[in-house]
Image (cartoon, rainbow, N blue to C red; front, side):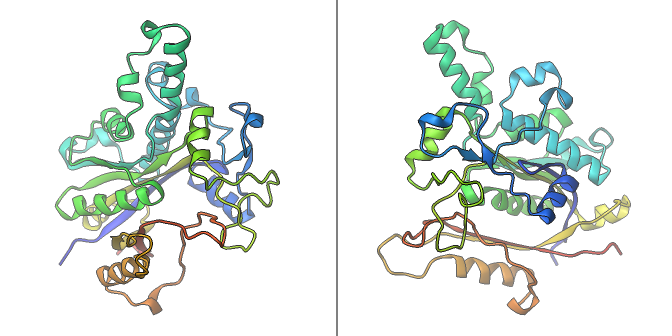
Length: 324
């Protein structure tokens, strides 16, 4: 019988809330976090709205040395990890270093850090480029920096999965728990709200250019006009359920009961999208049926109805869990 994998800690960095409690309160109030971009002048570009985190101050969470070495999104990941570990009442220094691992997801790595260093190279010369450019841009940097910061030397990794990256990371983290690792830090963190990152978003042709905050992002609506870029993400602490019980974890948020991933068929084949297969496989993995599911969170890309979004399917089931 496979060991149960439970969530004992949560850390969130989002445009509408820093920390799980603040984020959940904002969600319940209906605060979207979308607003005008402030980090660069967006007037020259189509679209000027984003989900920008405006109340995060890196110096409140990290040393000046760490701030110099890291991209903004890595700073989010490090802060969210601290919050998640605190929520789980886990002190990494008191645990075996090889019994803790890190699996995170990113879609672009340190995009903003890299852009700043490119400006230095072309504006001043290559000798002005930071030595940390060699690591800060890399999509695996969140995993590496979290592992170093907390002395976690167990099974680790990184996934690049765009929309579904965070779910894939959780699925991989569960595999490591099932193989015997006691604790895995996992989740996804991303963002690229610089002029360079904005052009990259714009070139994909799916960016909403509506200027009205209340109308710019309308997923599942006939008036949908595309997506609005954002930044942030969430970090979870996953543990073996027995380990969590034995150490008297203060709370168990839920169990990762089932996971599956699929890909859509090649466009033009007329074959059924892969999402149904992912749902069926995840249900089977969890030992559940559709009648057992209370809520579904669907991919909300905001694609206009005339478009057929190309995306892979990722499905996980997080079931309520009570401590024995």
